[in-house]
Length: 184
Image: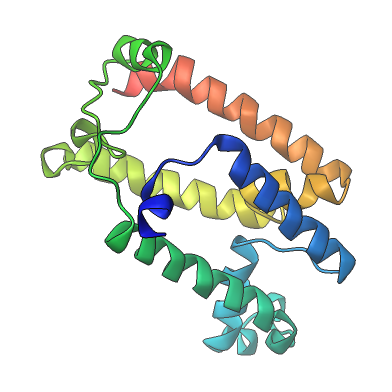
């Protein structure tokens, strides 16, 4: 069984599991999102005493916190016990695209060139902090993060989620093809 879990699974497996989860949530009248857990955690920390945005009954979101905890534990288990020792398999086209951006594919999920200790320059740390702040602000301003809008919002047929997802893709294309070559 462990060997089966360690093997790469077809891409459509995760799609089917996500669809099953979304149908189940729709059946029970729920929608999930990871970024909404940040609001719940801030409420638990007492932020509701300072800002009305965080003043809500956090107990209604216990199930979402449990989902967050399960996701973190699942990731830890997968990274610790289910990790394959084989190099990551990327298509030749993706490797060519990475090379065109100046990124050498080293067979790892996190390329050493981008995520290794030698990449920790003041510029990169500043860019990561700025990117994190923009993502956090954007998630709150848009009422959800990329996965929340793309998976949960679109499955609920929400027009704002469709607009947000179009914006995410446009932003990703602009970052990859226009800004990334200028920054790095």
